[in-house]
Image 1 (spheres, rainbow, N blue to C red):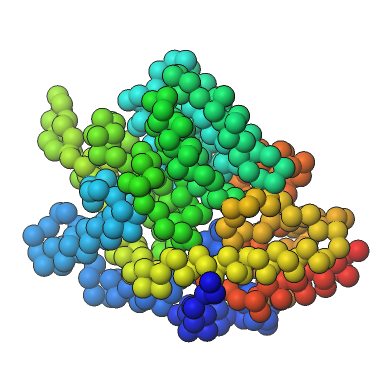
Image 2 (cartoon, rainbow, N blue to C red):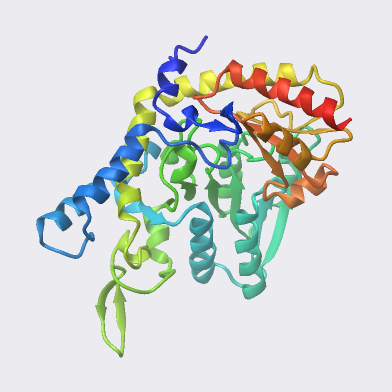
Length: 408
């Protein structure tokens, strides 16, 4: 089946695509780092700051009540987007990293004791490694790691060997930001639950590219960032099952998360307020609804189909180049293409591509253990979304060839 998306129409919704970089047409291929914003998101942010500024959950005046209504509408939209059971299972945070830190700290305080085990994978982003390491050091827990094969697939047989009754948490990336690998998370969840472990899915790289149903998957927690799915920066989401969130202590103290405060004792608010201390990023939350509505209108199934076509084209074209090594060639893969070129440092390549208006990512992509697994220190990464097209891929290929001529 071929995609039916009108890419030219979609591209008109993203004003940054009209920007010239080094007097060249912008070819934006750094979507795994952050996505561009459609007009509707920008307009919603601007409208809020021009006409609707007021704090939420604080006042009885009209602006506050309207802001609170829209603020909570976004929570309901997120609930529907990931098919959660309750809107109060949706917690606003500062980003995926903040969500994972909240989870490691609060879940760890409630459920992790000395000798317990936490399982991650070799392909995790640093934000899904370091918080759990800190927890293990604090509690005397043990961190275990699922290895990755040469194609970039998780070794599930090794995962099964790691699981036991001491396993309390499996925190796993849904889609790798470096390899593009889409992990078999439903099977992973079932295996983990069989030994009584809970599962957190890092959906930062999957939320914009495929439908996620937390009830169907039966994940216990799920985290992602708004800026990865065409929304504003500074906003993250933590989904957690109601019974688990209720059992976890607050992560931060302050306004909104309390029920009653005295100097002798403080009682905490109900969900989701218990985990949302202080004044939130109100404009960003309200604008995020616009982003999710925009994506829903286009359709995630159509988006996934188009992006798969684009990734296949990009992969076939880049393989025609000499001295290219693709990092990550799993069968189930999202729109990420990481590679190294013999004799060229990724940073040098990225700099020369930038001179041609082409934005890619270079470096270790916050996955240093994975880089070590593949015997490299850095890689170049092109990442695609629905406003990219074959013209962008062709520009990348031409840009790489020009860089090769200059550097080799």
